[in-house]
Length: 180
Image (cartoon, rainbow, N blue to C red):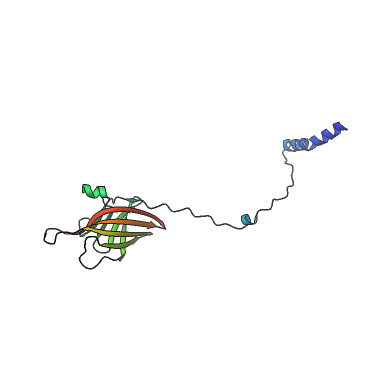
């Protein structure tokens, strides 16, 4: 009797081996496991966070030979080289290098006073270009001596540039000047 029981125990294994060797698969009935309610509902994928825009040196400045304002990293400003972070005219146009390419910007807002600036004064300008928003916050750090007729600088400044690209922001501190 014991021998028959052990043979019956091996029978399903033997039948599976015979069925597999003949090229047919045995059908196994399994009851489906019910999915939890949360898994049944369609879930929207979480969007990947935008990478912060990379602010770089302008490759081909548009306005450098005209009246305007020019902003550089502090070390570039100190060495008086030609590496600009922002290049803008005194009107409504500007330029930056974002993510490795030069981008043209248009000024959409400014709270710069319409009078002579004073050292320590703060003002800001906002630019857009494509899907970028650029805010520049200025602090006037110096002015030309009013008696110096050869000075074409309107103001010297420190400026913080904030670039927003679809909610991802990058900020850089700069130094520069405005003038002709």
